Length: 401
Ligand code: NG1
Image (cartoon, rainbow, N blue to C red; front, side):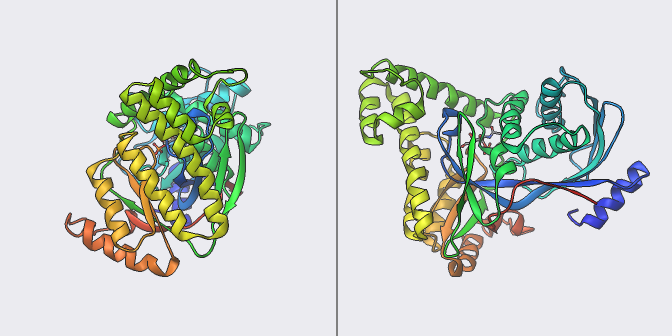
């Protein structure tokens, strides 16, 4: 259900009064900078036209009630406090509680709200449905309680908040969900968080295709994710221990400011064992690709954008070991179908790929992926859920109804 009139009717039928406001919080596709946000390195995601839509009405007590029109997610209701007991692991309501607890800890006693929501962001697909949900649940509390905050502060707060669900995540998703602007990707820098628009030129189309494999945040994908964050920390420690003139160098960003990627890869090769050496090589080479991607986008150079995507995929597959056979197959099919390049996007182990092509090639690319990947799997029903041209979209909005 994405139609606003229907959603308003559902709200009024459930609560006996009409909603006061609508929140729209977008999903995202990450163009470049994969698995480096939690290392404090800059990334370049883009908000997409898929989003969470949440209608709400203030309450005067500290209760939050959220009904979801998607049948697999039944209604959640809880009391606001600085210590909210989580639902069982994997429960969708934990994203709501994550936002609520963090705001209660930061701002003290809060009034709650009643809400009805829906989402057309595919779940567990690397398109950040979870952060969109977290942001969508936070916005009514910000409005109802007139909290003194801004988008940057909120993005930092909600990035920490989402760790409530057990993932040691970075801050990319909440930042782009809040800070994106239409027609552009968003460069996100960390420590401290800064956001700036990187326009997507008309000559470049971005296509998203799902591998049809879910990357569950509560399962194997989460364990892999947390293991990679630890490996990155270990690799950094070992490299820092071997850097001469260490003064002022204590993190990935400060290391990359002092040395170029090739020097660091060489250093990593010398001081790290096999797995850590490869993880480290991905991190420093991916950081360099972010800078190259900005230049390629500014120049409207779709061929170079494609090369960068291909290199990133190879690095995620071979060095970071987060690809799957389906993601590899999809990227190969995309390139064979006319994309200038493609790579897995998001955390990996399932989820989607992102491909770039000239706009006039998008239709042929979609046809070719349909024939090569989805038809053989009898997965053409509701195909636009899994395969679509992503439009660079604006960040979260809150409007009166
Ligand atoms: P997805 O793909 O939504 O699971 C996760 C992290 C990002 C980032 C990417 C990998 C969360 C909420 N999101 O995104 O911060 O690290 O993986 O680049 O933890």
